[in-house]
Length: 102
Image (tube, rainbow, N blue to C red):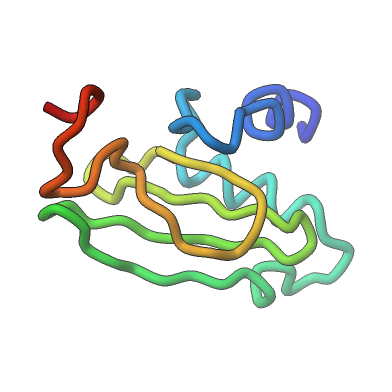
């Protein structure tokens, strides 16, 4: 199962938004299958946060050294990247104005 998952998640470029169609249930299933311990999810860090009026849940897997952010409204991963810092799924800050963010 990890091989199919890794094609989407681990090949994703860390600097770009995650564009695959991975559900929260599938993400948790893969993370659990990666650990030898019965209570594998106990090591996963989670934090729910709100950004620009939307609710997200952040997951960090120490064994994979990867972070995943799930859009709680649609229940899908919107960003994955290396490291444990909490980033954003939005390409622009709320008040940012630039060529990319008019």
